[in-house]
Image (tube, rainbow, N blue to C red; front, side, top):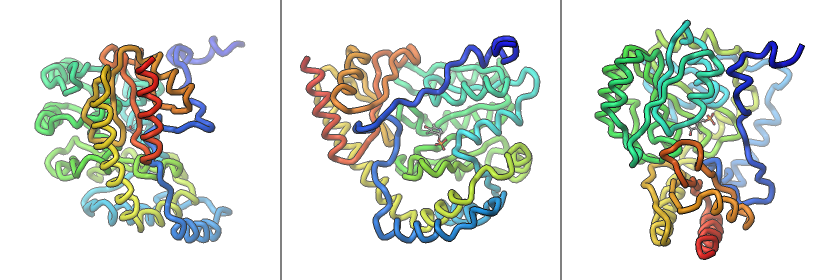
Amino acid sequence: MKPDQLIRPEILALSAYHVADAAGMVKLDAMENPYRLPDGLRGELGALLGDAAINRYPDPQAPGVQRALRAAFGIAPEYDILLGNGSDELIQILAMALARPGATLLAVEPSFVMYRMIAGFAGMRYVGVPLKADFTLDEAAVLEAVEREEPALTFLAYPNNPTGNAFDRAAVERIIAASPGLVVVDEAYHAFAGGLSFLDALARFDNLLLMRTVSKLGLAGLRLGYLVGKPAWIGEFDKVRLPYNVNVLTQVAARYALSHVDVLEAQAATLVGERGSLFQALSALAGVEVFESRANFILFRVSDAPRVFAGLKARGVLIKNLHGGHPLLNHCLRVTVGAPEENEAFLTALADELDH
Ligand SMILES: *Cc1c(COP(=O)(O)O)cnc(C)c1O
């Protein structure tokens, strides 16, 4: 018996999610916050983690984390929260619960690749609707696809990854209103988006859910995402969640870090400032087309992305090469906004590489 006789063909056809080796590199490929917690807070966190009862299973509902999220982000009591081991797991929970035979998951493209991958894992049909060439939403095409495909589940990242822009809000609302299924607005980059959010739209749409993560805010290592919505929906998805998906150490660390969310938000504000400087510096380089970003990364296009990517890597700077991922991303690269010295290292290496 060989794997290809037993494993589902759509799994055999996949290649595993690739994470580049970043040892010793200036790491600007994964939208991580470059800043750690300040020393004093790290000491306190260490003491709390030392006290954590790792001999016990975690509380499956993690009520302390839920309270901390509500307090930090102003989530009203009329909504329920579903916690995930990263928002990746929430996407998986949603897809598993909605994967009736023939059910469709719709997303725009290019967007977060896990929507498509997880649709495959869960056995959902996947439909991708291209953005316009400037990465704005093709509202007419999405509305037409919604009518034709009747998706059970639609994902819209707001701001979008890997393009960095936030779609037109009114257009997104029209898509939600026209959708026969659930629409999940994925606000992974909320901390950098200057207050843009669909949190206040939850009241007006019964088929809307809001998904966020603490990853991009500075807690990527914890693996904690959250889904906010009306109790009737969250209650169903909670049945699919594995009981102990958020571990004891993550619960302790998340509660502590969220009680200091002002520190994380100040770091995010610093990064938004750095994003502005990086955008200007990139715009000043000949041969670089830069796209506006509301997130903690910047998308840009060069004449030969694979060569520039490899050149940067050889100079010790790791970014993300998007060339080949989608036709609209031809010769595009994505750089995470880092600390000033990291952004400097990136810009120096890029200027060098473009000179060659
Ligand atoms: C990074 C990212 C996520 C995944 O976040 P995790 O909580 O770390 O799993 C989800 N959606 C988008 C759009 C992202 O860019």
